[in-house]
Structures are given as C-alpha cells and as structure tokens.
Length: 308
Image (cartoon, rainbow, N blue to C red; front, side):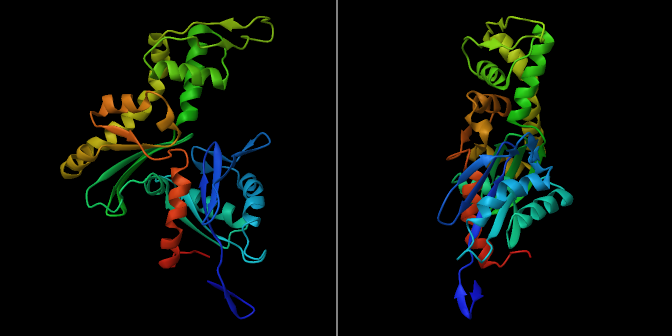
C-alpha cells in the first residue's frame, strides 16, 4: 500500500507473460490484454527471453501507463521467465518492465505460473509434472507443496517446429512454404489421417507457378518427427533423472500439458506414447501463465517480495 497526501492508496499490481509470439498483461480486475511480441519488423523476444529491451518497452509502456492508480502511482508487476533463464536474462526482463513503467518487478518461473493458472493442485504433497510448450521454449517442472523441486528446459517450441518443417520440406521437395503451410503439415504429421496441405510459394522469383502438393500422413510425420523428437527426448531425459519416489507420483498424477503446444492436435498423444505416462492439457493452456501470475499477485504482496 502506498500513501498519497497522507492517505493510504492501493497500488495497482499487474501480471505479465512475456511470450515469444505474444505478450499478455492482466491486472487484478482486468485482462488479459494480448498483443504481438513484435514491433514493426523487430522481435522483442526470442526463445522465451528478452532480446530487445527497447522493443519490449515500446510494447508494454502504453499498457502499463493505463494501469496507474489515479494516473500517478506506477503498478508493480509479476513477470514470468523460463526456468533456465540466466541472471542476465532475468535482469533484462526486470529492466524492460521497469523502463515500461513498473515500480517494482518480481520474476517467477513460467511452469509454476502455468500450473496455478491451469488449475493444477500445486499445494499437493504429491509431485505434479508440468510441461509448458511455448512458442520459443519448452519448460518442464516438477512441483510439490507449492514449490518447483526439479526443472529442465530446451530453447525450442512451436516456432522451431514450424521452422524445422519448412526446412525439411525445402530439402525434400525443393520449394518453400509459408508459416501457415508448415502449421498445416504439423497438423497432418501429428494427426492420423491424410489431407490436403495447400499451396506453396514459388521456389524462386523466376518460378511463375506455385507448387501444389498432397502430403500423406506418413510423409508429413517423417517431416515433423525430427523437430518433435527434440521436445519428447527432453521430456523423457528429464523424467529418467527423476528419483524413483517422485517418478511414481508423476506416473499416478500424469503430465500436465500447457502452452501453445497443448493445442497441437496429436502432441498430447505423442508425448503420452513416448513417455508411457498419461498426459492431459491444463485449463486454458494459452493463458494459463498470465492467469497464474495474476493469481500469485496477492501472495507476492503478502510476502513483500517486491524488488525496487
């Protein structure tokens, strides 16, 4: 609580999910507000971390300014970061949000926020495993009694899946496909039926006509699999290193899947098949992180964790 003219005034608090593709901001009363992580042709984030501080400031500043109490008091912010974020990467997050107008900033692990927002019982004394497949990073965490007791991350997510598909199609067929074509092939490769993948752009400026291709599920799966395997291998390796007692609890509780990857048809089944553990998407996978961060605001305030 702040004081203005000798009177107590509640300072506004906000939650921020700095995603590789989208940024989400929610206050205790409103949101989430969703906006692109790009400003013009400049990407503000890559692989789940800030790569251009000024771009982040340009995106966040107009949103943060609207949350000022009485137009004066700057808000405090809870912001999420991958579990493997380095000290410098966390400092870049804090600097970006502070420059955008936040009075103080607390950084929390993305999987923990996703678990809270996804309605996973993090207070349980039994281990819960969360896999957050975002646009630029895949984050695994084991949560027990409200704390992360094990985590691993790989800097690769949905964006890398699409790029890998684009590169593999070019290698196999010698023509380039756009982002939405790669997404279509991902759906084919992860699903279990054949269907039309759509037109590709010309191979070069000298090629007048587009190449139309019918992609079978088998070929699409071959194209998709190397990229998907990077994610599944990380999950399997992480689980293999878990102590037996925790592993038994995770097998009983299953894997909680969140992030954009949770919405890819077939991803759940592949992870389940590869790990031999039941997998279920959390509530509202796309917004689970920011909703969880918002739910954590009162706890951060109660424990006076705000950093200035």
